[in-house]
Amino acid sequence: MISPLMPNYNRADLAFEHGEGAWLFDTAGRRFLDFGAGIASSSLGHGHPHLTQAIAEQAKRVMHVSNLYRVPGAEHLAQRLVEASFADSVFFCNSGAEANEGLVKALRKTMADAGQPERVRVICCDGAFHGRTLAMLAATGNPKYQAGFGPVVDGFDHVPFNNMNALRAAITPQTAGVLIEPIQGEGGIRPATMQFLRDLRATCDEFGILLGMDEIQTGMGRTGKLFAYEWAGIEPDVMSLAKGLAGGFPMGAVLAKERVAKALVPGSHGTTFGGGPLACAASNAVLDVILAPGFLDEVVTTGQYLWAGLEKLRAKYPTVFTEVRGMGLIVGLKCAVPNTAAQNAAVAEGLLTVAAGDNVLRLVPPLIVREAECDEALARLDRAAQHLMPAMLEAAK
Ligand code: PLP
Image (cartoon, rainbow, N blue to C red; front, side):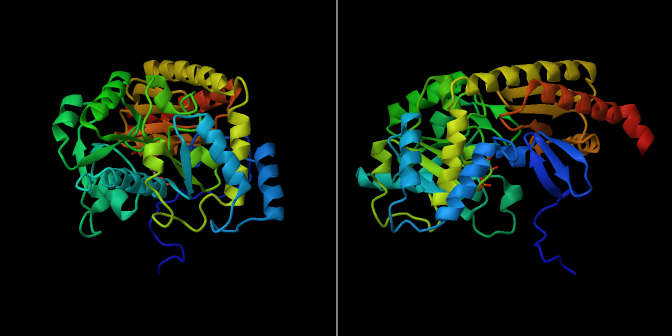
């Protein structure tokens, strides 16, 4: 008989009762170090006093009013995001896929408003992940996710990642823009090179098309800058955010330059819950913490510390881990054994991670993680790796 929860997830048999910082405690009282952070979302960890207080206080005052009215918390949050980014204006929604849908609509409408309605196509990269709605399945382009869901939405072209010649060759008179992750997250923590991102900016300008960045996983401090595009010294025209935006409370956003944002005139786009008082209170609290002086520098330092430890592990267990990649606190360990086996071995040692594409084990701890907790994670991974050595795996068969 089918379970009341639809069977679309292969869930681990773990249920968490509460969390503190980078730790989660399950219903059986076991402690887990959370280097998955709810898939790179619980940016302030669990039970962060500033975040939980902001949510509790706002919930008591007013939780939802709809976008028929002004929402002061949303106005304040938008102002702060504009001041801290390339953007002139922000649209709030509820998830990553919804943010990307809004981003693509904005790309097309900008072109239509500029007298080029034929420019509807968006170039995406092989290995991308942009979400699970019908259009974002097409943008993601992975046949595995599309199978059985009928005709793939038209309007998305795919090129190899980090290949500028291929990207330039794919631009046609129907191209509206490009949608790219600065670091492919689900695809296996595969960073775009800085040169590729700079060339991409120049190419979009050269052809008069728009540059859209999906910073749903890389944004909000994860790489050690508020947004990953900053590392390349470029600016997109439009960007999607979600995941860490409200520290684990569901929220998404589209940030855009005026030229793009003004295409979304009243009635052209919307969402009932987007930018509600509760989500905005959560996100404003997250920004209070992330934008505090020194916080992002610490993400960089902690990331370097974790990276150095992982490099040692890779050298110690070359038959288990073959590469460390990523940036800041979004790190991938490419595995020589199945990444799901590595994930399970880590769970057995009380360490939560997330599997990603390209046989990668993803480490995306809360941004508040301390070096001592990185040491603990490394020790647990070391023990997990011992069980993953080919001889051990063979013996366990
Ligand atoms: N884009 C990227 C880069 C993501 O990592 C994800 C989620 O993993 C999404 C989009 C989709 O976000 P959501 O699951 O909130 O719809």
